[in-house]
Length: 408
Image (cartoon, rainbow, N blue to C red; front, top):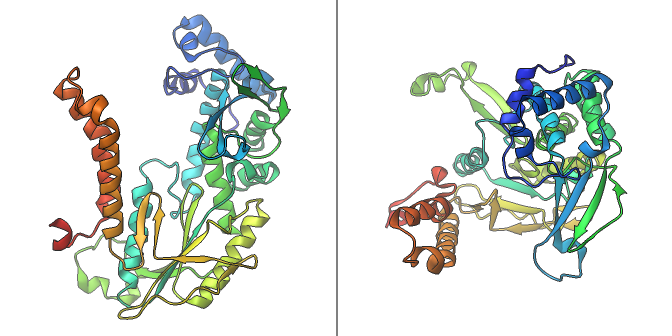
């Protein structure tokens, strides 16, 4: 990982950059680099090689211009605005080169329970795992899910711990120093209407808008799981993974099966931790909150919820006395995990109803502008319908277990 990048690596990173993106503080757009010819590309490649050898990154390539976007609520409250960081395009290309090297390490060390920002994985995988645990548990045991909400997770990452995590997972000192150089000493300036603030230092967290940030955060959480105490029990499963899917006799052979624990279902900063007893629920909540705190992350007590599912023929167990930092956690009948509702009755009815409402709302918002617009042809309307309405309706439908009543 310490060897300087080749020109082919640089060109690969350049081609993967998305066009028509706002530039950072240097005001150099991607189109100027991409269409500047061999002279511009070669010069930028030499700058990247110099940064690689000296382990230094110019300020213009790592600083950020922050644009504020209002979300909802009181406009005088800063927390109701979302900050969008505009970064240098040249710095993004350098970060993309680093990311291509880092991904080879990440795929080897990240646990299977992490599906965020990884190739060939998505939210549907985690939703499927959660529903499968529900369906199998209702045949024999109760089930609890703790849905964690972390406050400003990306901004709360402790940078010294992040660099230690990279070295722990096998990244060379030189490579780690390069990633660190991309973060150390960076500043930000907030743009509001026609004014721009004075620069201020950004000393914690990962770079918002940087292609490295998602993978770095996944590795950070991966290191956190290694520090989880044994008191977090998870759900124990027995399975066969030799490909004999349809040989039921072999599946019943216990000596050929494998036992393993599901500690968490993690996608980016969305985490669902499953357990099967109230006692395990208490210890797991304490264990995860403790390890989050040690890594500088803070769980939001008000937004962290519990979903309780009863054993066969039994009502959901009482989890009202489960507390997080002295405050009782709310037990809910359904929770929108990764945008798909999980219900304590182990059905997809709540999620299907929500999908229908969301698709209906999406269609209504575009009705006058698109679907009733006589200036648009039928082909365009169908494309918009499939891209926005149909995708909204069918999100997560791959894992639905449909009954006759649902189809009707």
